Length: 260
Image 1: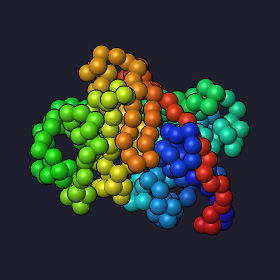
Image 2 (image 1 turned 120 degrees about the vertical axis):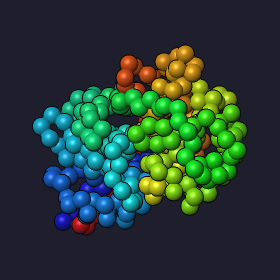
Image 3 (image 1 turned 60 degrees about the horizontal axis):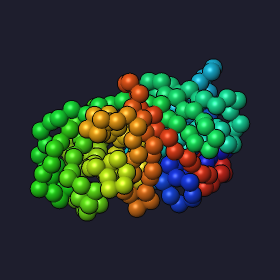
């Protein structure tokens, strides 16, 4: 059986920037084991699978090693495919996922993700967290997904050189490090060795955590965010009640078919 596949660079205006994701639109679900094998073979941070259900799509995301409950950049990538390659009939796409209802709206070339907010709570640092990050300390927060570490400035975030083997022992999906930005409202780097990704280039789901935090810290609801990976990611974010809106663009890198 042949299945169409797309690789999309998300949260960027040019190829080889942002965060790449593979997208497969299926007529019906493949076995979970096969979808995980496809994700492992693709070796992207996320492979997204979609199936149409009445007026919405069911969406699932797989890293090379596990299925995850939420992924922003791969949802943006999937929406780019539906809008640009599948001629989706309206300017809004509704998804159902393991994290509930997600919406994506098109405004010209911009795509806006509408995701549930996931505000972090202050907590004690788990054992070895600071050692794994190579830092002396910092304020630590937690959510149902990740730990978040607040650092003193952008330079501290840029200078991080984690021990990924040690960081993988931290009991969470991953670890977010963030600080107030020099030119953006806030910056971040996101590490997920527990999920098979040492450093994610651009992480939409992490911004559902950081946006409520920084909106409170900076007393503003609209925020510009910069993820400081090598590929860089730029997001325009808004906290709207208990939802986080994240706006970006995407470009197609590859269109083809796989045998499975």
